[in-house]
Amino acid sequence: MKKLFIYLTVILTISSCSDDFLDRGSLTQLAEGNFWLTEADAQLGINGVYAALQSRALYSGNLNGNAGIPQYDGLSDNVFNSFKWEGPGIFMEANVDPATPFFNSFWTANYVGIGRANAAISNISNISPDNISEESKGVLLGQAYFLRALFYMNLAVYFEEAPLILEVQTLETAYVPKNSYNEIKLAIEEDLAKAIQTLPNSYPGSQFGYATKGAALSLAARWALYNQEYQKVVEFTNETLGLGYGLHNNYGQLFTEAGELSNEIVFSIRFIIDQSNNTETFSGTFLGAPKVDDSPMANLVDDYYCIDGLPISESPLYNPQNRKENRDPRLGASIYFPGDIFLVDLNRPFIGNTPTGFGRRKYTRNQASPEGIAVFAPGGQDFYLIRYADVLLMRAEALAELGQLGEVYDLVNQVRVRAGMPVIEDVEGSGLSQGQLIDIVRHERRVELAFESLRFFDLKRWGTMQEGYARAAADPVGPFNPQYRGRRSEVFPIPQSELDANRNLVQNPVWN
Image (cartoon, rainbow, N blue to C red; front, side):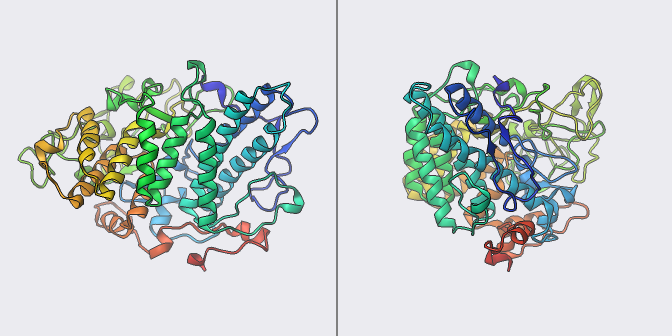
């Protein structure tokens, strides 16, 4: 049930907190002696770790505030973040420094989750066998290890170097130095190995949303892919393929509340509109235009092929006067074009009044609430961290990079056919080179996973971030001037407030 992720305002009390992580004693001060005694306590504690994922700076997103992860395609050539103060827009324009609040919000939100995970791991391990079975203890600890690995992956991808805190902190142990990327990498791998070992393949339907073995395997595959450890990707995904996941039969419906329980969802961050504040804002829109702050760029629109499987530069089906006609169905399912109805209950058409002339349909609500959709209207749309389609494409890319090309066709074809597109053999042909198949997989990732906050992740690990900035800079967008500054365009600075609070913490050399 969606209500499983609750904020534990009594049990997990964060007392005397400022917005800075390292100038507080402990992120998670627990009531000693009357909690962490039973399995029920342990379950509540784990729920508190999941609740950290729902932060506005993480997976629930934000509007007119520091951006959350659902807006991170704005850190790439996919999306123009016209509300630049949210973070991605000013980052792309190189108008940031370590004091920019965007960085601090993201840093702190991840460490809140890490602090809660550390508390859960420490205390669940010590619960008496009389009050919890070994099996239940293993499952709960596996979830905590999975979640801690996820929070550290966020820090490793965006900050690279950060304090590696694996135990509950006290005031005396709060002022810690940063660790290297490799040290964090190994800790992530160790946590995921523990999670894979103890997590079940599934839960009862009422517990949908808790991390499973498939989720841990898939997150491990994503981490291995980021680090170009392709054989590990193949091994992790090989196990995942046998766990019963499949592709949803309706790509457009998948990214609505009607698709949240699909067998394609490997792991999602769950949200619900109720009294517990478990809501999100990333699906919110405006009455006058869809998602003004998060507008798809024309270069992304042009990257979707025509229904014959050919690029618009080659296909005789392409009509520049009607750019949506005869195109990959994922284009219309992901992006609003002028004339599309974007609020169905009001029969309101999109008139192209966004900075790019396009609107984001994917993950965006298409009905007005009774009060009318406004900037901060809450929503209950789940955010999908990992889908089975991504698992297939991760495996395809790893095999292509290893030169093991035979299976790549079938993996990509599964994703294409579900979308209503022709298979590789019917368009590009068979007997393709390694480089050709790698290009095909990379293109497929862009059009399949657009607006799922993986574009920065992909461009960085491919070493093509500069090309992405060039595409964004050439895009016919209004007042937008992306500036590629080498590594400063690929690494977040450690927040200045953290450096000021902790004399043992030093800035990443990229930002010195």
